[in-house]
Length: 467
Image (tube, rainbow, N blue to C red; front, side, top):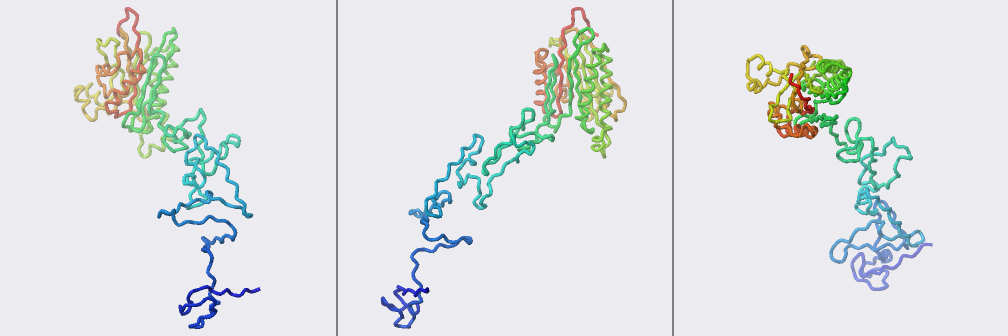
């Protein structure tokens, strides 16, 4: 049934603005029908936002405020902070407290829902503000996988197994085969950037230096026994030729081949000097073989230079010292009694050494020339003609044999400078002394890779003389 329109309780006529009296149904001035004037609403209307339907009457909604009474805007509340009712008008139960955050969970992830630190973006509802750095590892089985974390809590990277390499930057992620962390992406230092090894009384240290982007030096040290039971100590040091292809691979292959050759030949009774000669040949074959590998063929084009390196080595037995070399790496003799003069036991295969040997320059002039370190002998498929150098010595006193690359002797060129740089207790603490010598080169500038091996030479029995 239709309802009659209610009389408007208005003080003036909506048409002519003339005053009205109570109970008038028509304006006395213009005759306007006052029954068509709508009734005054009792409260403020609810406006629809984004197409939302206004709530039905009967729900006790909180009254909105324009300010806090002091001229400041009223605080904005999230929906979860306001009480609510169900469809029957009964108050809703309070929400359960959030689960306690684990110790490793960031503080932002443990904040209450709806707060700015909850991980939910209010400009994009339901979209997390932070994302995990690493997705769950698909290699883990369901039993191995960790329990599902709340949506707002980023998943932490799984701890690597004990046998896996751990990132040096984040200390949490695995290191992949390419040398990068799977968690933070940090490139890991190369294994050869700094190497140290002790083998019995022998010690060796190799360092990349301060200017090169990789370490192209390599070494091999070891101890064995002669057929009569006497001990033999072996050290090989190789320096990759930087202008060649894969110099780091060449030095590594040469040092391994020469070391294995010596440690295999000496127990069979081969004379140490002959064993050293054969070891240099074995190293040469190992470096030559690298030139035939597909990796070299790809890398060397259009520069047709085969992998190459230099080699220097020493063998210490009871009363006998044997050295061998090809290139410009050196062997020094530093006696335990520093009152006795030290000595250099090798001659460089270099342009400067040839100038001095030919009498065309003195040593100071030759090594001051920019061509001084151009080598004239090396191991590699493109070497002119391999001429292994070997020599035997019979020191008459105890001392230390220094086997090193030019990365060290550039900062201690003469035997006297090398002896001065080496600690007095080098025979008793060879690893410490090797570290000191490498530090000496780094303090001097570290322009090249630095490698040194130290072999203590025992005091010979009474009556032995020098060869």
